[in-house]
Length: 533
Ligand code: AHR
Image 1 (cartoon, rainbow, N blue to C red):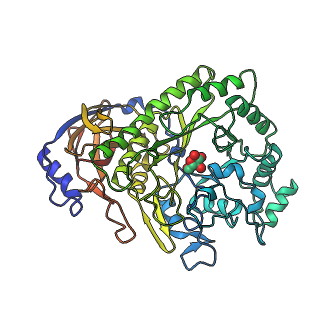
Image 2 (cartoon, rainbow, N blue to C red; image 1 turned 60 degrees about the vertical axis):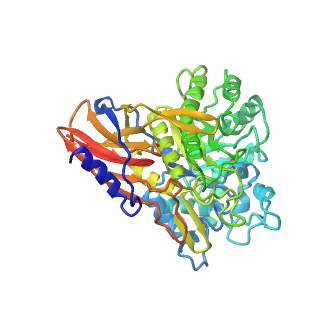
Image 3 (cartoon, helix red, strand yellow; image 1 turned 45 degrees about the vertical axis):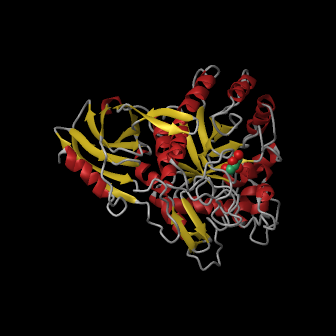
């Protein structure tokens, strides 16, 4: 297929979605990929999830109840389970977030009535709406969700209002083999004889804020107390300490260095350092569903900024952690808009996400993939009905947002080896709220698994498609196929009435003389799978 046909085909690929679209002009991009230099494995856990007892994430989102008429598996929404399996969800972080530091795990066990307790997020609920925690969804229900979907549990322990004893008891309850500790017998009496085998443990959440308003030195002392006597049942735990204060650009390097400083001379293990990085527009006039070019580029640019935040904190950690024992765990990330466009009353922090948020997801994942040596896990905040969601649900209504499709397009990166790629596409001068800025005309990442190369590319331009030529520095591109996520309207989103307005479409790709050529429409994410011979 020649270049003109490719561009035309790219436009037609989204026929119906992109009716009437004709590229004004096309930019060119040369991409050089070096499969022979494949580097670190991209941890599958980078594609992880975060679900908190907040608004309608659990109740009305994941949990519909065993007696519900909504199709469910032991009370868990069936469509959610199916979609999580489809994208190969590697983990769920639970029960918070800020909720975790007020959560007492014993409230959520037992076959009889469970206590009704205070939920941290009650303070943010609209007047008159109750957010009392019913504890219907506790550790057994959470583990059931993990087992149904094949995901691993990642638990956030209560450091803010809990004790090392309560933490250790929870570890025992989860991991002690049957017929050992009394807590294992209690677990069996509650329905699960076999241990839960929880490996991932977060020791507190945002201990600099809602998790206790501590200094890094105060937290480091508590961290050591919490983990020193960690009960040594299998599996070997992966312990995650609370990382830098802040949510966005302002992430505090002082916390990162302060924490490591306070750990000097101690032998306590720190496997991961948590980092929460939101594209945080809460203090702006930005809207979720209606925006102009400036708003579009503001969001994409902030997503790209994730890279320098990772690099800065990684460099700071390296001054203390010479052996590079500790890796980054970005266990909350996403675009967070100001309140006012929630999808239903009481669905706190829910947002009607658009194509813009899907492109933000893609550039973020590309950053994580390119830094596979540094980032061991990342968890989107949050999977359903909250902030950067893949799904919205209300009663029996359920839909995928455009963000979901990026997880589907990128799943081939999970467990593959990160491959260096050099993109020569130049920069775009774009309008942003502070005036104008330059951003990469094309960004992406590549990985290799079983002789298959996956190349994911984002064209953020609102004006022009890109013709990309992908050349391998070793081996040949024997065959290739692609898919694309875009829409004629940059503000396009899915609704319960139009759940497929934004969806994946095939993307025509040609291979000639070992080179791949592909036309990427404007404001689109493309994924290209190449068999290397
Ligand atoms: O994801 C919402 C909240 O954001 C989490 O509970 C908290 O950890 C962060 O501040």
